[in-house]
Image (cartoon, rainbow, N blue to C red):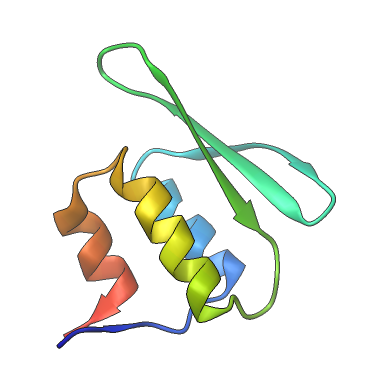
Length: 81
């Protein structure tokens, strides 16, 4: 069974940057990532800025992003084989 990788916020930001998201701003310890879908819809993700993200936080980010990004791409980035 695949296991969730241990990722830092910079790892997560890099993953989403490859998927077309850009950092639109930061407020405190959270970054707002934004991209515009091909249909013109504005898609927003919030990522906490910490050296090590807790497993539950990573899973919540994965669930939030799975509504916007094909899960095949996310699974490869967030889980080990």
